[in-house]
Length: 527
Image (tube, rainbow, N blue to C red; front, side, top):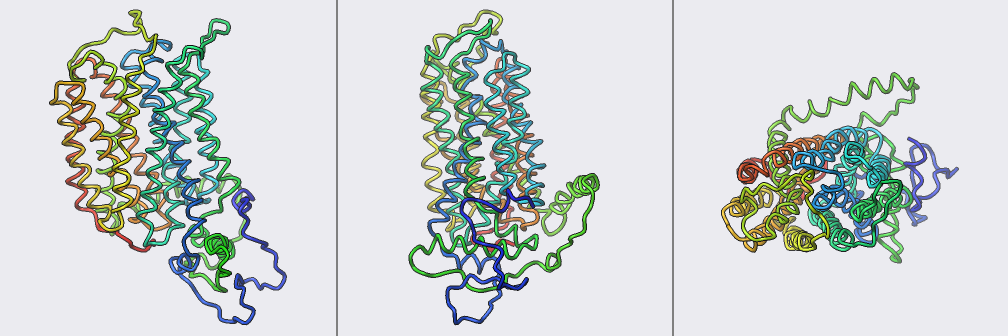
């Protein structure tokens, strides 16, 4: 491992104590204690307590989760304006919204696999930096194809950080608080959604953010894209400077001393002035990692081995005893991703089509950009409505934080998918803008419960050696669904938008029924 994985600002202490033998690690303030305990991972977590460290971790991981939401959802907010400057048809808009999900699909599994092999923290630093850097650069792209390419690369970064954040975060949480804390982490997606909607409302209608250089015009929506890249870059910096590696990962790869140093750091921060320190102990390291292999192999051979091993986690996931749960998770991720991202990325555009009243599916074909369609002055109503929808996530997030540990993710996932499917069907049925907006807010508030439940279930259903890989794989499945949904909406929204809307409803109802087949994982130990 390189030094980037070992030297956060929250230092875990010296590693060169001359009085320590190779197998001994002492973090006990009692000079008279001679007993060396052997602790499991969950027992070690209990010894660290719960407090300041965990809330700092929540803030850092939460901000990273929010940055991913901002980067993904910003595309939907700029479409009503950018379509004129980039001369976009509805099909082009569908391709653009699909591009970031294509990048997330490519990045999700690759980064997830790397996180299981090389560590969570370093992968988060790199993926978040890629997300922010290329997202910011896309704002200066003068041509649609270049904007599309840069958004795709940004999506590769998002694809790495989304699954790894939840694996990393869950591996610091004691089991009796894991459900509520992961639900709290998931609420930051809502926060990112609100930030993106608020920024769009404040920035995009502004006329002062406009200038031309050598025939290239910088509009307010480009400034909005630049601002949306800042959270990703700042999150990468926070992980690089502040956070340690996951102790669960360190135990899995046989780095016992490093793991105990992290536990000691957590204990010191959580216990504050109580004087309690992490006890003198040995950790229950998996047997296959007790003896470390220090043999040196060439970089080419290592890359070949990594490529060969890259597909092994998928084979393990779809073998007994994990086969049935993996199949259900596959279906659930596909259904919620098709429904949520299909509708959410197009809500601003659909709201714009309801400016004069009526349902979003009135089959009114809008003129293409080449027909001199006017996007200026920017109408603020669509951004206000999008902000209301983003804020409607709050009740669902509060609900999951309070009830996740008592009800469990399985029931919440199934129930929320069923209610979400019903609300989407009613969006198609109603004929007024007010009713459509109300049902859209209900869909927003209920569907977020399904996402929170998946965020809790996915880390708990798989062992450490498969946790990030499985999350990366399933988020990749979700990206395929999101790509398909956006291409379907782009192709049909002008001619027959009832087809994608009713398809969304059917898939959500299907996912809700299938989710009942999952095992209950409430407050189980991480394996």
